[in-house]
Amino acid sequence: MKKMIILLAAALGFAFAHDTRQEKQTRPLHQLQQEFVDLRFGMFIHFNIPTFMQEDWADPGAPADIFNPTRLDCSLWADAARAANMSYGCLTTKHHSGFCIWDTKTTNYNVMNSPLKRDVVREYVEAFRAAGLKVMLYYSILDTRHKLRPGWIAPRHVEMVKAQLRELLTNYGEITALVIDGWDAPWSRISYDEIPFEEIYLLVKSIQPDCLVMDLNAAKYPPDALYYTDIKSYEQGAGQHIAREHNRLPALSCLPLNRNWFWKESFPASPVKDPATIVNENIIPMNNAYCNFILNVAPNREGRIDDNALEALREIGKRWKNDGPTAALPPNHLPVIASNLAKGRPVDSSWSLDMHIMDLAVDDDFSTAWDSIDAVKNPWFEVYLDGEQAFNAVVIVEKEKPRISRYCLEYFDRGAWKPLFSGENNERVKIHRFDRVSGERVRLVVDAYRELPSIAEFQVYNEHSR
Image (cartoon, rainbow, N blue to C red):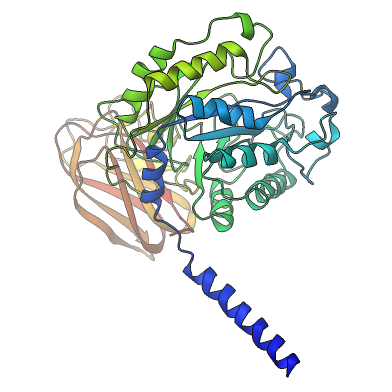
């Protein structure tokens, strides 16, 4: 009888656990984006091995034993964030030189082999959650220590990235957003193909479906659509500024309180940015443009925040209060996350204007374009894929503004052109998603336009997540 009771209890426990998993629903991406924008204001925390150097990009040969914060207390960071009425934090778990400030099993180059011998990521997430703040993590794809950089990238690097992200997303509770850096940037030169974006994106979502994936280096992509990110980012120090009156996408704008991202010896005696300017020229107008603002506050070599920074945060908190949810975010397309099958492929077209030839529409450069000419009344453009290819999305990006109003899309399969779309679309970035098809070529035929067509990029995707 006792054995039967134990077995029944075990069965009921299994059923309850099963039901709990079934009841856990993933929130729609648009809702997650709205919740992110509603957070309004947060603390970026650049704290890693560059904290102990005079440069923001650390020497990849720097020994782990220079990382030695002697008075680290992450609860003081959380208190400082609350004083400014911030709602979340985001910590640099690994910067470009590859030093990991968590207890990772992927490399010996980590905090457990430093004099500190404490998991900083764990202390940070526990302190911020205890203070009622959301938790985000920063992670760099570029890793100069482990030669994850151009010319050296091998399959082991992809596996290292996946293993490190599994640790961060499995061992530290709910992560609101993963902020990724050093990917597809002109200074890192690591493409979304070499470290496959779609694979990494889907891995993150498989572990934490509600974790937003945010790439900081989407600057080259047009502000009208989300490419390789759930949230559009703008780094003000790099000259990236949101169009406040026209933005319709969930966005993040970042800026350091001091001159640098990581702490420097000059910080305690140097002026920080003016709190009134932070509030009136950043937080308030950004929030009114569907944009969350994140201010970097760099802990010093003791692991504490300098007095001048603390005073600035308290002053911000006096001047600004979080009034709750922002305006409703407009509907937007799901982000593009797959590799572009048309990039660099052979193309053909109707007559081009002078040197603005058809190849410029597949060069992965949104500043160049294929331009049609007056003499052609129904311009057409055609891309030759690498043999028979499966695909389920086509994106047409017009240069600067929408010009084409009516057109059709077709694909060539088994000796015949077959329709994909025919009609009007007045958006500058024209995104078409459909059931997966296979073909050797894809063609655009323009039926009507307001101004001569100018296509910056013609893109074809096989998105495995759809």
